[in-house]
Image (tube, rainbow, N blue to C red; front, side, top):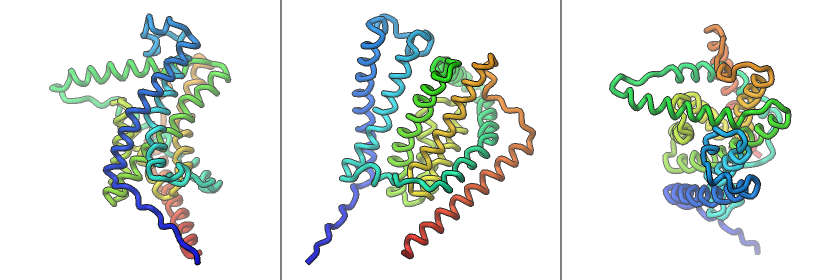
Length: 310
């Protein structure tokens, strides 16, 4: 006689959200300490005497800044996602759907991100030029100052003209955030919101809002919001986190490579975000993006139907 061990039902979504929050708090503290200890071991006690290097103002310690950012990504995003899977008694690659991706679907995701780039660039420029009402001028000034300081830090992190610097930045700014952020925002939050709300569109956009908000870049909120929604629909349709990690990496890698190219050719880095495309170029970008989304949904839906029949 054979006995089938019943699959344990997952905990309530509210408890899962609590686990994610608790995991993020503990994870960021532990890994911040680990990262700082590693930095002290490499750069010495000078790091303690002057903490301005944490803003990117001192390029001598940009390596330490990259170590801390990597530690923050792991602690704040990866740890809670892994903790949730373990708490539910499942291995992360089963819990979040990490099967070997299909090469054809990867190709569609690549074309999707490529075609969406001009449209996202237009949204970014529009967002950067937004102004709050006059009564909120002080708040806008503070937001602009935060944005400017963030730009200084970003330029420091991405500084470097060599191929070695490009490779390191692709890892620190491209790959690590793609893995860590997708596991927590799409794998952790979106998955939990979907169990709680039952409406995939609400779950996807709510996760995207949190994804964009937590970056604290007010004048980059909308392009990041749409990116988060794009990743969310990719994950919802494919049921495989690798596709969203791939899409996220492509987006990050494009920005990193563009900044590297501008530096290598002695071009002003503040012009890297500017796009000079005619209006119909953005329209074509939007049409192709929507078409590729439809193709991706169609192919993943048919694939799921075939698997169910088998």
